[in-house]
Image 1 (cartoon, rainbow, N blue to C red):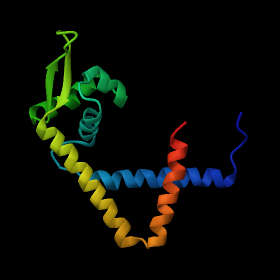
Image 2: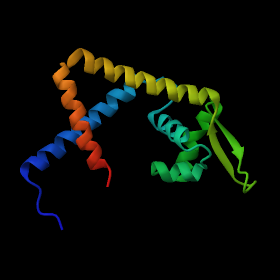
Image 3: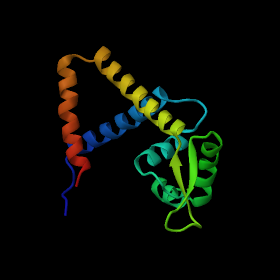
Length: 146
């Protein structure tokens, strides 16, 4: 059983959550393409890591209802970013996969986000501050892994 967190732990928690939220929004804006929603970008990212998911798999991964995920996926199919493939083990089931264009969009988004953040760190931080960020990330990484 954990004892009550110290005031510094509570404050660190609040600050990390606030900064991570703002950083996620800025990173999302850095790679926004305009023709797909953040939820659709999330689906593309999920499929880039787990090729061949069903709509139900995606809904569970994103914490959505099946019907809502169908509504999210349909425009991606129409834009040619995602395709349906028959399940090799169950021909009645369809699996989703990125098309070459979908994969290109995911990779471009990752590159845009990485370039934006690296540019911000270069332009707005000293070398000492960048080293502090690197050290802090190792601590946060430790917390993120059980």
